[in-house]
Amino acid sequence: MDSLMARYHALCTPAKVFAVLQLLGVAGGVAKQAADGNGGAAVASLIGGGVTLWIVTWLLNLMCQHHMTWLAWVVAVGPIVLFAVLGGLAGVLAYLSSKNSKPKKH
Image (tube, rainbow, N blue to C red; front, side):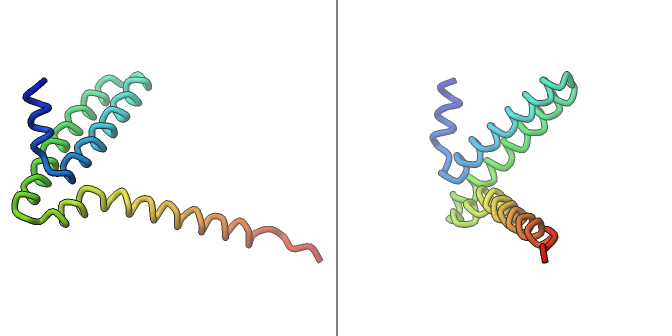
């Protein structure tokens, strides 16, 4: 466990942020699959998420080592920001659509 924590502390900040977010996502996916009674999918989620976690975290740390920290931040947090912006835009559009579809009283 000490070796794992030492490796985590040696990572750059974008890699750490991605690793924590990915770990939470993998844990949530595995828990959902297990709760649905689909053990095979839970194992697949764990393996796939773990491999993705390892590879992308390694790549992000490599970017930081080569002085591309800004790119590492974009890769680590960009999809989350994009998802939030698109989700907010979809919410605004849904609100405007429902507001315009109400029948007008004369």
